Image (cartoon, rainbow, N blue to C red):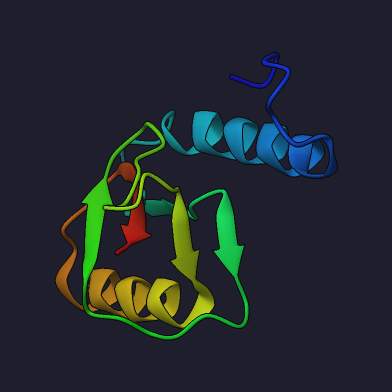
Length: 97
């Protein structure tokens, strides 16, 4: 994925660091963790929404065919994960419709 020409160079370092972090977490069986990766279009100005789709390892797209989520919706989903532990020892993502 990192080697594709479409991958944004401005976030390449961060994406690789996240990949390394998840590899480290997966080595521990005695640590309770979840890893929430934001959609590639991560919008600080966008509205919060209850209309979203959850996914796992791969990039997912919303109804408009975009990998989009607002910061507010991301935060809402993160708090839900903290409270409900749906993704125990898993990486997950979400997109906002």
